[in-house]
Length: 211
Image (tube, rainbow, N blue to C red; front, side, top):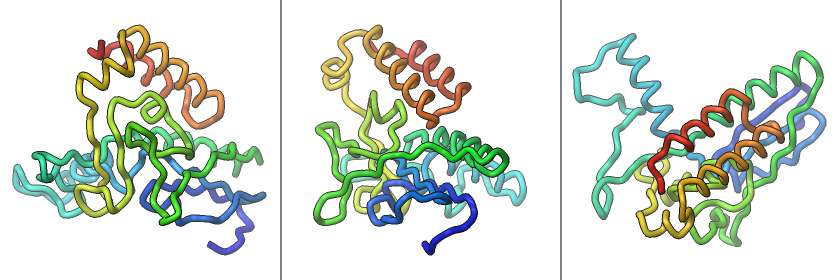
């Protein structure tokens, strides 16, 4: 991307992240969203609903850009469940403040990359570095947004943790909720999560069956 002279806030997923090297500047911010895929389940369902509303589609059929989960080598392959839309909400709010009031968005760390250009991952299979929403800081699944790890082109893959791993990470429900609350507080304070979305994240954790 060439040098820009107007405010630009770019949301980057694992699919594009490690290849995008343009540094932040006076008019440019880049948020690498760890765990995010280029397209995902939530976005696909939104597109499917609007396309069905506007153009119609027989029941049980999916539009080409909004496929359902696809078969994988070990059964059903779950396309991306990571809540990238939360970062999108924060980005739109931040961009509005930048344009209307001259308040630049916060700078986000970039995702870490291996020597071969792939995303560096932790022991749970999740990306290191980048903008870290509660779902990646306190994970209940591993999220893959790189093309090499996807169910289908650009759609990501989600591998839920089994009960044994969940118990090892979060021995009690109270511990899980406390960690999510802390991650939501941090993301909100740093400007990467809206207050209303942070409240929803906390409520969902409190209502979860994880124990």
